[in-house]
Length: 190
Image (cartoon, rainbow, N blue to C red):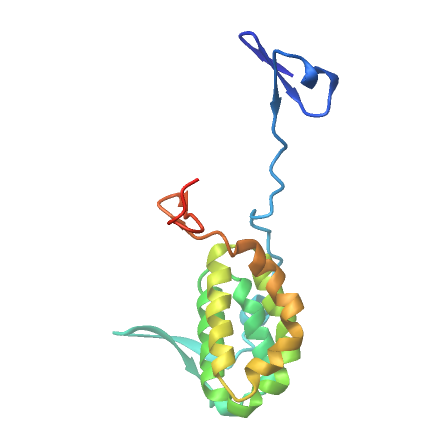
């Protein structure tokens, strides 16, 4: 309860809220868009132990991954879920290796990708649940690449929509421009 001038600021659903000179304060924010802290990922643990067959290579075009083994010979059931788990990372070099490793494996995976789809759902869901905008955008780009990476991969994701889509539903209207929310239909005036 705060008093400024002649108006009394009160919380809702109280006796004071019914008084003539009172102003009811709104409810606190629910925090649906607030970033969630991410736990240490399995990807980070494996990277720090040096268990990935890759290294960072610098050249004039920028950084890229130098694979110590041919990507086609990797065990996709083991490595692809680990790289997807690394999508939650926001710190260099973990973020770079996870993102680039996923794209490289999807580029060369072919028919090895579809059987691994059920193991990728939890890492995808964890990445989206961080509610970090950078992580969500990266995960959406990876999902686009995943769907285009092989035959029937998009169809294999359909049973898991109930786990992936709810977090996207929260952010679907967060398209802003210049700090303002864009109107849903600019032709209609209210």
